[in-house]
Amino acid sequence: MKYLGGKQRLGKHLAPVLAELWDPQQYNGYLEPFCGSLGVFKHMTSLPSATTIVANDYHPDLIAMWKAVQDDSMIYPNSISEEEYHEAKALSSPHPHKGFVGFGMSFGGRFFGAYSQKYLGNKKEDFCKEMVNSLKRIAPCIQKKKVKFTNKRYQTLHPKRKFIYCDPPYAKTNFPIKYRTHTKHYDTFDHDEFWDIMRKWSQQNDNFVVISETSAPPDFVEVWSMKRYRSAAQSTKTRFKGNPKPNSTIHDNEKLYVHESLVTT
Image 1 (cartoon, rainbow, N blue to C red):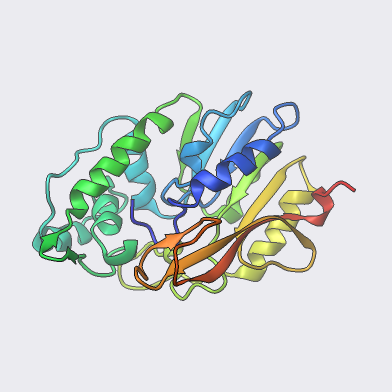
Image 2 (cartoon, helix red, strand yellow):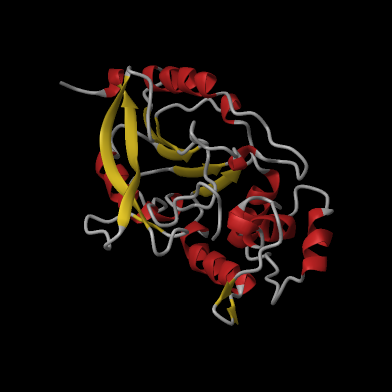
């Protein structure tokens, strides 16, 4: 699934790290306040002893889409024309089809950023088919009784005894796409407020909070990192490998952080 800032490629690397940190005796559930494209979440729905596994996101159409995939009510289109793209954009929210089209058929996964038309040589890519196949692959992972979806601002969540993985809009990101809930403007993401809330969650109610970012305030400790390579020959593809192809350059280091209060010495 195309989603700006998503973890589709990186998720398979992150999930084992999170699973190793998971303690079934200490935490009763797993929570992602910024679930996005479920790049990590889809790997975490079988955690042992987790009574609830919750995927939350502020985007109403995105969550409406995931709920429809979960309960098998999703109507998968065979194709989406540019006219149908604009018709979907005008739908009232929340609407699963609006989420499907807004992300799956938009350039770079940017919610209704622009109708995506991409060619490889003389062959046109079928973005609609790719989106359908992606959602159908994820469906079995989320069609479990303990998996729940919520559409809330992360500030309103009050987790207790939860293992929490946060993938917020990165500070260096020009377009805070995960918090674009309208088609005409972007919401502002307050990074200082985010880190303050992460401190609170980490220090209260027996939570364990892990955060994805490329940098963090000094009271957060890096517990994992991986170099992100971008190929000069294929600049749109990002690789997370220890053996990048020739002519690849380091784009950024993807990192996981926890608050210093959670680090045992």
